[in-house]
Structure formats: structure tokens, C-alpha cells
Picture 1 (cartoon, one colour):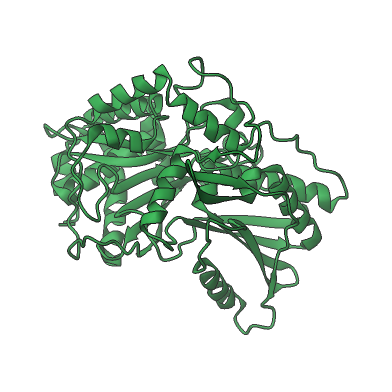
Picture 2: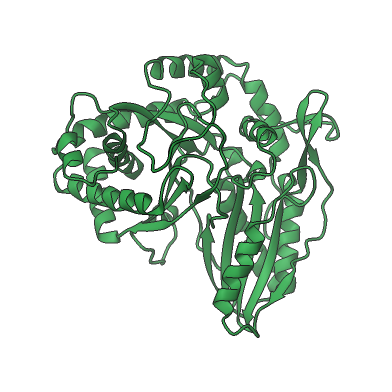
Length: 476
């Protein structure tokens, strides 16, 4: 989710190029957190991102390879690896290179769609070592002369959801130009990710960072560090990061009513859906005070809008259901929580945890075991000449980063500003969960109960939380 950022003005200089480029290039704060996690759990695939682009029509494979080559040339982060250095982990930027896209011909397969699923499954099982190129690569599956599937694989050290939408936009613009024999229409990037990472470390010494730290210390001081969801199996000290990620869609007719409630209460769609999610977790855990983490885009400075790389920061959104509030009252609490988080979203989550010093428990992540994220970063209309394009992000590779990570994809909000395009009004949810803790049936029941909660609160925002929980499924 993206909104205003407190570090956007004043207190520190503008972002400037780091020179020389062969010196120590630090990781961004989000990258550092992930880097240290990878050192603790070598080889985990939970932080690899996969997407597929289904391309129907006449595909110019040379223009596609040229467009991908140009994206890699334009953005250093797509040709960056990561290594240990005397001053800690560092980014290593490599020269531009020509992208080759392997083509897997599945046209003779008796069941091309099943062959695609097998090929995608095999590809997403591959590990992306972070100390050598490429950390992003592509594979083309050909199922018919006029139908292809482009598989996009990328490590989270160089990826976030906002950046992926920028990548898709640039890919479309470059493909169209090269297919028509024109040069790139895109201006040169004004900012490279390594420059942003160095600037971010300078910002940590600013008064703005101190103010944000003071806010989080106060906001989270009395929040229990762990959310005790009833699990289907006992929790173990060692995590395997094994997971699944089923998708459930809240239909348009219900989502439109949720949007209407958000407008009436002068809150965002995210706030209403987060409040309903808090009610679900309250019934599941029987806790009335806990934290639900979320990822905020952190793109408060305009020069970061078109920058590829991992900027997203985790924030802990405290939930307060004490006193059996009405849903409208709960929504007011959530509004204040979300607004405060947006105003103080830049401080790295690790700095917050270090300041709060919650108890350490093997296999657990204080304030960050259940996430609720909104992927509503703007995406322009996807147009490639001669092709109908469908993008499916977040393909599961059988892993899970957290106990439960619910990702909402509101397509209509992503398409704001696109003219003449009909977009579905529903919201697709990815329910990524830890298979060592939960059964698939439990997660499906939770998703169904969540939809029921949304229907109940739009019907009567004055309903009390106890009534909502009492009428729902028993997840305990």
C-alpha cells in the first residue's frame, strides 16, 4: 500500500549518485533484513517471486528479448548481486548484458495447459542464489503458434510489488517500440536503487527518524508481541517455510458495498477490509489486543516512483478490540492506526523491534506473524501490439514467509486513471499460509468467514464485534 511519507521533505539532502560505483554500496534497510534472514535459513525459496504473463496473439520474440535487455540495462538493480564485505553485506552492480529468453516448445503436448503447469512448477522450484546473476530471469513457454506464457522469476532482494508494476509498464512500452522498429521511448532513469539505499542510511541519522522511532515506541508499548491463533498442529522451534497460497475472490457486488461504506465513513477500502480482518483474528485467537503487520510502499519521494528495487517496509498495525466496540467504532480506531503508520512508515521494522526488545522465541517473529497487505499500486493499461496480455502475479512456489499472509489485489484501484477500460470490481485475495501450522480446510473456512464478515458489516456498521464473532465459524 502506498501513501504519503514523512521523509519526503526537509531534514536530509536529496538523493544523489554514489561515486565511485565500485566502492561499498550498502543494502537498503529492507534488503538488510532479508539478507540476514537468508543467512539464518540458507536456500529458502519463500522470498522468491514468480509471475506469469499469458500472451495471446502474434508474439515478436526478438522484440521481447530486446525489451527485457533494455530493462536490465536501464535498471542497475536487475544486474546486481549481493556479497559479504568488510563493512557488512554489499551490493555488487554488474555491467549490462544481453538477455536471452529460453523457449520451451509445448505445442506437441497432448495437454498443453497441464504441460504449462508442470513447467511453471519445475521453474519455481529452482533456487535463485543471491551471489551471482541473474536474480531475475525469464522463460517462454509456447503452447500454440499464437499463444505463449512468459514466466518471470525474481528474488525479493531486488523486487517489491510497486516495482513489478513499473517493470510491466516499461516492458509494454519497450516491446511496442521495438516491434515497430522505433527506439526506446523511455527517458533515462533519474535514480538507481543503490543511490537510494545509501541515501536511506543517511536518513536514519536524521531528526525525522528519531521522531518516527518515538512514535512507534509509544504506539506499540503495550501490544502483546505474539498473536496466538489456534493452529491445527503444534508450533515447532524450527521453521521449514513450507506453505501454500490459495486464491479467493470477494465478488464485485459485495466489494462495491464495502467501497460505499468506506466512502461514507471517509476511510480507505484498505481500512475497512483490515478492520474486518481484525475481527476474524479476534475470534480465531480470542485476543482483543494484537498486531497485524503490513507492507507499505515507502515511495514518498517522487523520484522513487519509477525506480525498481525493494523499498517496501513492514509496519506493525496494532489492533484494539477492547470493550466490544461496534464495527463503526472499530473502524475509527483502525483509521487512526493506519493514518499514524502512513505518517511514520519509513523507519525500518528492525529498528522498531530493536527499540521495543520483545521476548525472543525460537521460530517466532514478534509483531509480525500475520500480515494483511494491499497490492493497489497503480498499473497502467497493459498493451502490447498484436497481443492480448494477462498478468498473474504471486504464483506460489510451495513456501510461506509467515504464519498467515493475506494479500488483497483490488484490480479497480490499480486501474485508477486508465481510460476506456472495464475492470472487475471484485478483490482477489491470496491466502498464503504455513502448512506446518494450518490445514487447507482451515484456511478456506477462514476465507469464507472473512467474506461473511464483510457482508455483515456493510449491512449494519453498528453491529458489535461480539455479535460478528458469535455468528461466525469457530476457528479455534
